Length: 311
Image (cartoon, rainbow, N blue to C red; front, side, top):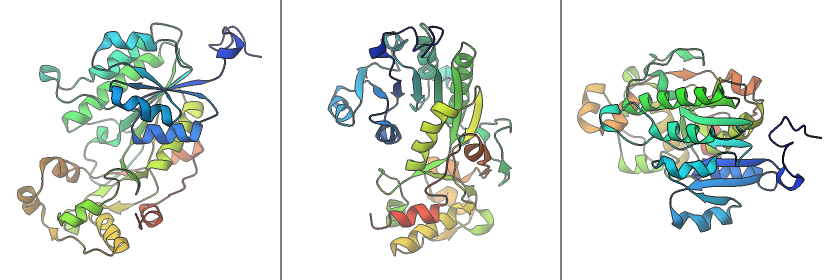
């Protein structure tokens, strides 16, 4: 039987069922809900009334709150035994462009009452910046090169602060997410546009995770994640970005994109895409397998894209 010293033990029996609060319940959050439906009570934060019916249909109880308005988050304190935070930071916040005010507001609200047993934050592998194609472990110091990566580092700091208040807080650093049934989840549209890729001598290593495997990693981390621990939620792929796009083209029966030098790419490609082409690293996913005991259903992008190539 639960002890009164535990968050569940002090509650009446009807409230002792695990309650998961999903903050930022987009595609991955819904996949997590699908894996846990019927096993835990599912709650989801939304600031958009129009999303309420879809969340209910997916088996979640919608809670109206807005990460950009801290006062609305107070109602979340003490509601859940576990929290999955997948909401991105807001865009540039003026003079404090490096701050993630959303995550700061959320963790302060959660700290108001008895803490949840665990909180998992979905960060980004972009916090490492450019690593020159080296293999990267979770112990590598962060060195963000972009404003959005700086904001993710700030969010990680806030999560670690909450982890010192009694919550078992863990961080998943996530690379590019793909899936054939995810909006923009494959290179198909890019191939249709004929967007160039870098020539091999200028190319960068890129990392990926199938959306279903990411959802499984989130679930595993909620119960198995270690306190103050970072884990790479990445697959086994060891691939250059251009080779990834070529692989997709071959699977879809489409023309491979042109290869260009980096100097030419700077004239032809949008800034956001260029920022991804300026960072090269390969993520070691040993902790994902050893500590979270996740067995990838799509270990490489070749297997993952093949599964959904008819989409």
